[in-house]
Length: 332
Image 1 (spheres, rainbow, N blue to C red):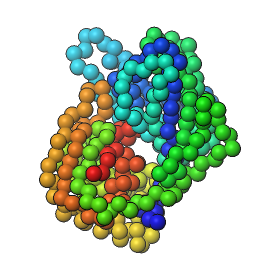
Image 2 (image 1 turned 45 degrees about the vertical axis):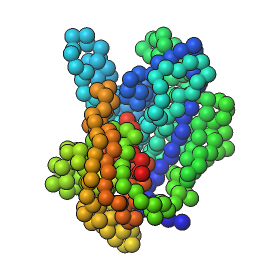
Image 3 (image 1 turned 180 degrees about the vertical axis):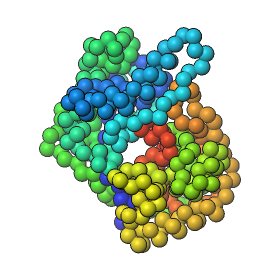
Image 4 (image 1 turned 60 degrees about the vertical axis):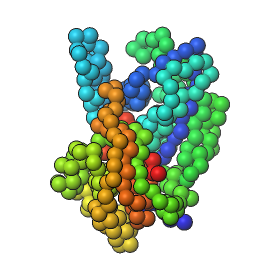
């Protein structure tokens, strides 16, 4: 069965929070506020030096919300490009904004590379989630807001295309120890390549400006008429930045690929550069969401050699604002 075309350490947690009050409303940009609240609570649990790194990382978000509350401002401030002091993505699943008692709010946490440590999740992230659910701190807990009004109901961990239970009905299974490679085990990358794929439907906004290791591609990425070569370059950039100490994008990926996989990647890049964009239906996301565009792009039939890399890119997220869930899509 085909393995991941580029090896990546990853833990995927599917989170289900159950509302325990009569009604709560999610913020318009849920991942943005989720990053600030959960990140602040994680930082509060750390020693002074480590906590300082979290506070510094979250400072742009705190400033963003301070500016957002300025009634004299006619336009919302731009969402800053931030990241936690670990490689993490917060992916909000599509849903409504208002939730009643007993309803579930579902989102996904992804921990990458050296940050894919289940022990860190158990020791810091999960307790911070629980605190976010019961907090009475008036900084977060307000009437009709989510914080302080939910229980951590269920959590699952990805194993290939399946989700295995870690928390069921609020009970944690301490015996379960996921590994950072199980997300890809049994996942048949490219198995559906015989199907005719021609479209990328972006599930979250994307912004690929400035991500390519090829200067002319990086310039064209500001244009929503994206070639698939730019998408693959964004995948290379994403993986390379996960590799500790690697700053040259292509060289970073090459260092973890054998000769056959290097040749496969080069072939996919060459074929993607020749693929025509037939049409697009892209719009700007709402001002309270990060990213530059969202919608669908349609190409000539995508060669089978490219499909595994696109599947991987959709899982890892590409471009800017990946911490806030940007840069994932569905192939069709």
